[in-house]
Length: 88
Image (tube, rainbow, N blue to C red; front, side, top):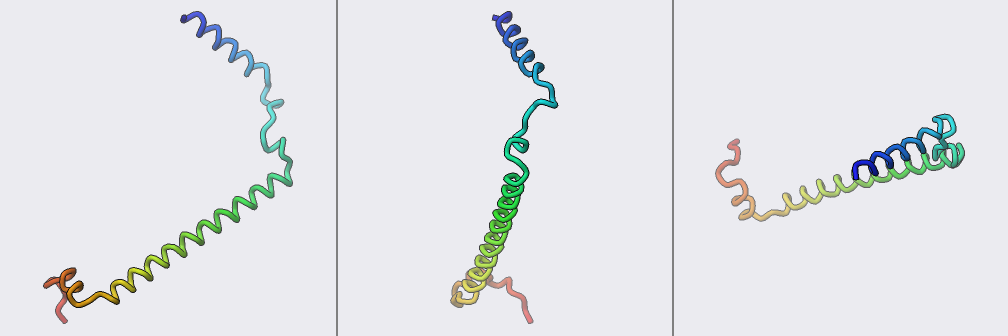
């Protein structure tokens, strides 16, 4: 069993060694510069949209928290803060 593994490793190494680094084709080479530029622009647009959506979500959550705090009844405020409120 150990001999088979060694033989397989040798075959794998010989296949990768036969392709020099200069001849290895990358995805960027296959796509072309214009397509690659379009993909990068689309990625930037998507990240900007995601960031603005996240900021909007955070602002909405903060607004909702303020509205809930504003609309609390006296009983809810008393239960939440009790006697630990500041004295003016």
